[in-house]
Image (cartoon, rainbow, N blue to C red; front, side):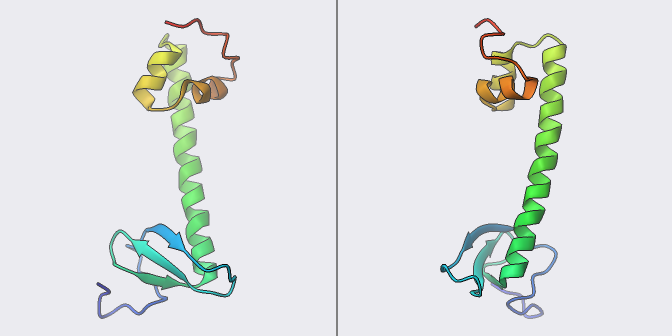
Length: 107
């Protein structure tokens, strides 16, 4: 339920969009389901800003993940085990390490 102090179209800082739906109209408002409120109507610019912020957070998390993968490999952890522990596919681990998939023998 929307709090009485908030009006649709004016998200508070606690809102984190998790689902975006819109009709194929660039001027339409987007219906957004948030973790802290039921429904929030966002203008297109607000939705784009939310997606850009999400992309920055994902890029930051991926950079941290890649560093941990490299450190584990350099410490002697094999690729299969890195994949199991991180939940990242072996293909992605190979890409992060810049290796061919034939480089590390199966364990």
